[in-house]
Image 1 (tube, rainbow, N blue to C red):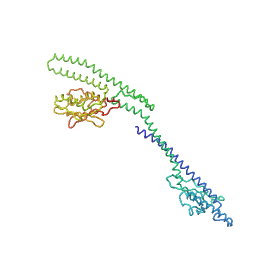
Image 2: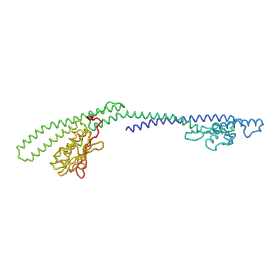
Image 3: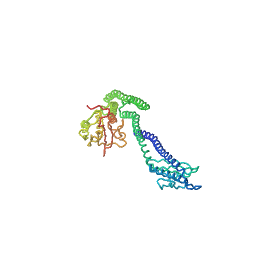
Image 4: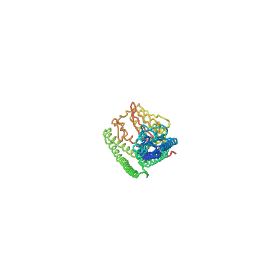
Length: 479
């Protein structure tokens, strides 16, 4: 989200800067070219005034000797001015009769272009108008600027003054004028990017805090709340609403847990009294009565369910006491504790893996979860088979795997294993309440651990417990 918002803000700011920069650059180039065109217009007007009184080639009457001398003097002056103009500025200039022949031109021999801007400017001046402004020449174009003015005598256009200017100096000035503009645009873009980063952080900071609080609550840390923060008013209001919702959810869950715990505790006493009465009643009945044995079994099963319900309520309520733990040593200890029970059933229980693997866990919760998992593995593994408990470090996680050689579970059953009160239909005759793995999951989740299930080829079940290897952000410092 941060990347998308940054990209949007930067793109908008860049578009605004470019929308301002391009017209300004074009205006600067147009102003520079207009100055050149105005200068050429002044030059052509001056040359036209010099050529105005040069006698045309065809005369209504034969000129006198004095008139010829004056014409020659004016023509010589015009030619001299054109030559000096070309030598000084490198601009081609000439005065041409209507048919395109040269009255005077510099450099010598230069003619009216047959096509292009020069030809268009000459044709436009023949009708008595100054040529229109030439197209804009950009720094990357090696074009020339042609400007033409008519030479008018007695109301008629008798000749045309045409200049053809190189644009190198002008393009260089345009480019140099653009450099400060480009520098300003780059500086403004850097400021815009900094503002975009700041604005994005300001807008998304409440979202980040909300996301962290929501993740904490989703992983079982129900006390997590969103502190007072800056940001847009809508997000601050959302943060307050989130805290109110979290308070309400925590209250409802607390009431639910308290009800389960109280109900489990309050039912134990009447159930114990009922079992005692059943035992007394059994003394009055013949030895081996099947009905009374069935009632006793159901009573004991109900007592186990109540005990497990109380354990589940406590597991979901108790906070995790996270500390740096030698997971391999803890797993080896639970294997040693369960080995006598496994041997009495003819099952081999062994520990494998590294000698010392540390992770962050609640030792009591992890021990209880391992007890439940190992108990299930031993319970469902037939005699002569084995149960393996292995510990390993994988990246930033520590894993404890309990693999048995029992009947295992189908794919549909794997999707449901760990649900409360769920038991496979093939294992209904095995003692249990269906809450052991649910309690394990609740105990592990409080400390940021996870439990998952998979098939153990060729048969059996693999239970994988994954723990964080590094300290959580809210964990106390190790002493």
